[in-house]
Length: 443
View 1: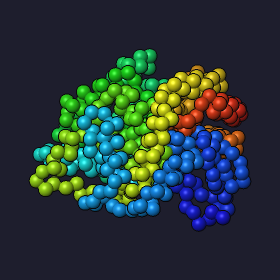
View 2: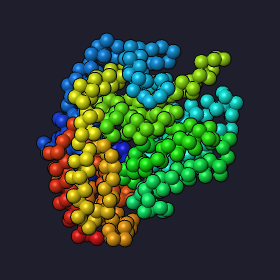
View 3: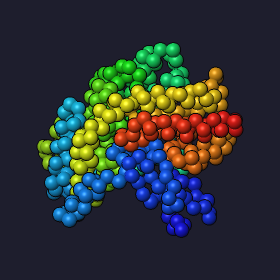
View 4: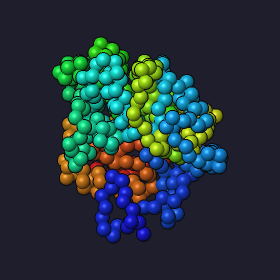
């Protein structure tokens, strides 16, 4: 019985038993009844190398035997030292300072706090506000949740941390301007950041938080030139550009970091999930030398940290995970197969309920619509009945674990392990075709 377990982000129905997942191997998971499912979400956007990799279990066990735990409060340990060097070498530009956390939300929280203190230490104490995009998800801590752009996720916990503001995202399918010109739309969306900074006052804005490909709403890639323009804006107003890569890093888009794919230089990268392929909790904030500089003089201290940030076992697992991905060439594997993944999913565009397929790498969203000709979306009642009441349940019953979500538009999100190939893509498409075809009849 699971009655004592309080599940995360879950509606609890008295007497209902959730599926219990007991085993994973490769791209598949099994429940307590022995039923197999294709893991189309990599656990929770995390399991890059697939399930059941003994190399990662062995790395954790070996580290536990040598040093199971020690904090990074005024001390270091070898796995953290080695991993910090590995991340600094992989990060773009002068992002050479690595602050470990216990997860992605912790990393986002750390980045906002760092931005505030950095500007205080450099004589601009009023710069504390942050800008993010509509419907973007950045975590559940009070600060990270304030940056998150999903009203329904925030309202039960208000008041939140003041100083967070939203601008339009890059959902070209529903572009409010320039819906016939992707590059012009990207310029328009980026310019809304400059507009928000001017409105709030450049001397009050500290940072802009952006995902390379925005997750919530169904995978919004950046239009051509978008991040070039954002970088120009941040430089003009002396605002930090934070690349939130909790999902997008470590091969999800075919590169170590999404900023590399889209050729922009952040001031801070936040990351987690794929760093350990989800086998152990770990996050990081990777920071430019410039932001570290004030903390190297006058006895200044970043008074922030956590018990488990940079846990030695997690760092050991991350090192083994990065070794494994390098050895198996998984970044190149994603780049080689991403077009066939997209092409396979785009076959679903012949279904009347499928409005758009978008994403990059091994990270895609399928937007569902009531009327494809007009792009009419679901009503709240239709989302409840069709998306949550039917699609989510039927996909899982058919053997596909993924996410049917309507925190922005109704979408099916797909983020499979990086080891997947055409056989997995075909299985995903076949299951989706059956379930979405039946869902269309409910509208």
